Image 1 (cartoon, rainbow, N blue to C red):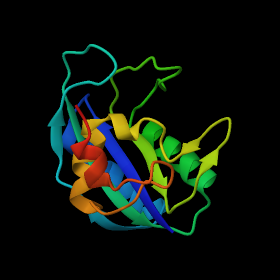
Image 2: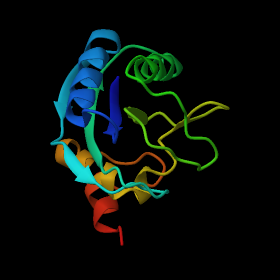
Image 3: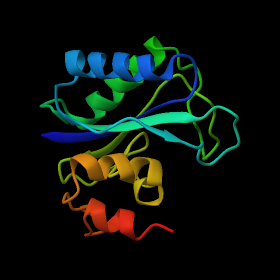
Image 4: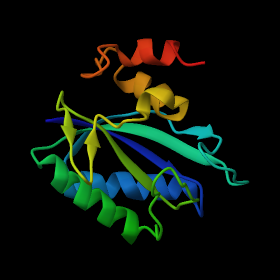
Length: 153
């Protein structure tokens, strides 16, 4: 299954954090088949003086989506993330891994929603995602990643 992940870091050695995250994902989740450039971005949804580095990756995996969530959350903890964002309250973090898409799966549980419910509003997700999957069609919104990026304000 093709999995798309968004990676971000705004604490510590941000570039190293993203490289370490990719290495652990490749080891524990599946083969990374594409990765975007790493981009500099402003914090989204909260104020911080710490700028982010963000990127998106494509991963080929056979792991069930909730197992992917469990493994990626463990990677976040191992790389120093101590606080999860809850109910729209965001914090600085050494690493953040968001599941954007899991093939064309539409999935909603108490712990996970796929596709990610806010990805179409986030330039820091859409810009790097458009580098690796411009023609991927959002299974709920029915638009390509390029179209979603073009529609952002």
